Length: 180
Image (cartoon, one colour):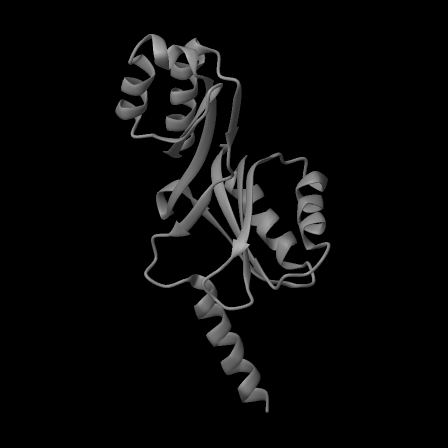
């Protein structure tokens, strides 16, 4: 049964790695729903957060194939329950409806969003939350003809007390030391 999985991939920052990782998904005919890359808490290590809809067997296969890539230190797959995650969305709405009534202000307050910028032509609103939350705000604001809308990729951390990569690196270092 297909469901949403969050894959986390750890690597050093090397040119071309993103292309090689996305090629793994292309070869497996699996669409990437969201992709975010950032530095991790570990110095010099970058974290790819990739959201996909697939079976657990496919998630395992994707992680296995990604780990075969040179420059990838380790990859994991998680369910949404194992992660804490958010997305950010920006909405540009015409200014006229704000002058005409307080409806947009009420929508923004109810959604827990905030206004980032006000100009003579438009207002930019920011909302952080799950995809469903940011989409619901878009649908509410769209009655005022949203001029622009963008949603970021998912940012996520595990519910585990320690980064699983840290455990992997300790085990690897202990093994390498034992070889000396």
